Length: 221
Image (spheres, helix red, strand yellow):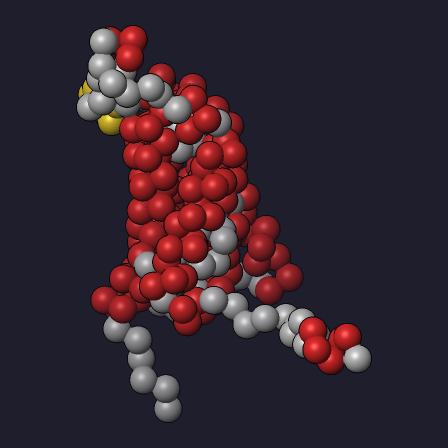
């Protein structure tokens, strides 16, 4: 009989070792688009975490009553309903950030991370483990977005959370903002570098090679 996994392990594993962005490569679109500043990264992270935790709770509660033939439809309806509430809340209380996030809050509905956890974990487990798993994955996603957002805002503008940390040349300082950091390609390269760094430290995360290149000596014969 398999030993049950502790709630602490379920919560902490997605932070680094099973991170949904760096290991499973989920949620990349929003990671590329909304990490131009820490504020938008935090807002997106909080929104997704709330949605994934609540959807995990609801799906787990009704998991025994959902026919397999319509399970994905039910899960999408639950997630979409929660996303609508979050989007309306942001528009009501954080309108400026909501405008900067544009359509990406609404696209949480189709985020592979949310649907993946509800389908693979919440549908087969009780509410408490499902919520802990969802929270861990939400925090792992948030960690990556906040790290990338901090780097892009700091080196793209010299600011962090709106506070000027590096005096720019326009202000008589030494720092010349890197405008490339505010464009989507910079997020792509930063995430790639983060994936490389983590897999260098944790080589067990490296996928097995799909094929072995031919030996040069044998190929030359």
